[in-house]
View 1: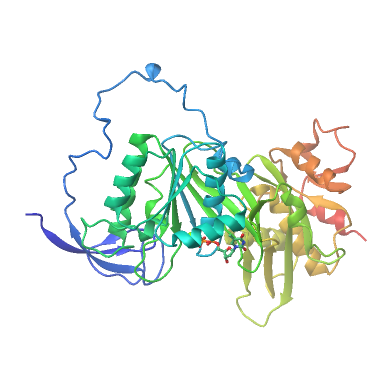
View 2: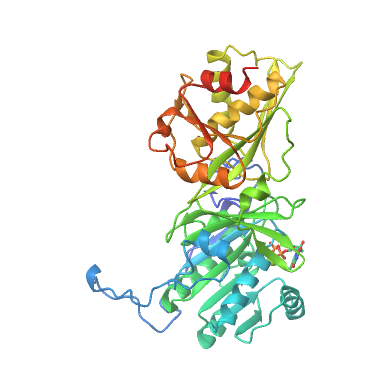
Length: 456
Ligand code: TYD
Ligand code: MG
């Protein structure tokens, strides 16, 4: 007899504890612990598929990869994030807030794949056949090779998959699928782990590329997709502001590609459209001649994207002035503000500082440091940046401006969008002579950059 015991599990990240906790020590979320009855996992003797994976060690050299080429999903921005397309047997988790467009994205991908003759199966535990058909009609294509199954029982789903043998599989969403083998409710951490583990092993054995769709949840007893991150090959998060129409698809883990790549989409009346030139989107609403705004050529993955960094400094009555940053790391902000205070003698202790990256994009690379600084200074001095100017460079603690990577594509992108001047690290100037029509101004320190930009 397996022994039953109670365990408390964080529904956000899956952390387990023998007693209830108010705050998860692992992911710092509050009030996410739920009690579950834990049963010792049943011994699995039966394999989901008829191929027996219990083979002995094989020589790496002898493994055949001839048919392992990627299957492009047919949506450029999705393929970019995946690293060039779908890999057979790979499991991709797509997480995101409810209503962000996950089902739309996977349905579009499946429609495109099925349109090219690839046998695709969409398992929905959330929507009815009619609803799915209506959505597909809205997206404008109804290929014959796309099959739909509305089912939530794992055992039934596996039976259908075994019989049907799709090349591409979608489970939307994993939180609705349950197995009768566990007593806990559908959506609980143990259900999510068990059902996903079985779908993943099925995908590996049958070499089916599989998308798992998961809603990000913060409350309730429904476990979130974070719980699955370590089990799958690729983790993509779909982000965006519901008030805006654009969406960003970001890879946070990818066994078959880079994790820096982002895909940009716009939600329209006929589904998600690719945004192939995101720079134009992100700087399109930039106010000209307003203090506190700098355009920065940032590198996202392999592609340069121009983004607008906005800053607002305002006198504060608070003893602890506010430092709020959206889209920029909070610690990075504190460091840069300290550099400004110490190296430029700027008085900021009595100022609230708000930073925002327009368009809801998150900047993680150090090449944007100098742009953050120029925005803050521009707001504090109430002086706009000179027109048609972009700024890039990493800033060190002594106020020096350090060289950054991939300078040439950044400059090229800025030039393409009509900018005429670039402030960049002095060290990066080497080898750039004559490569651009833009005026390139090399600077060695923050001081030099500020003097150059705001001298009059
Ligand atoms: P959906 O893919 O259902 O989100 P998720 O699966 O992540 O919960 O997207 C739902 C939203 O997208 C909904 O608010 C309607 C909107 N939408 C459009 O604006 N245009 C479209 O063509 C489609 C299909 C959806
Ligand atoms: Mg959905």
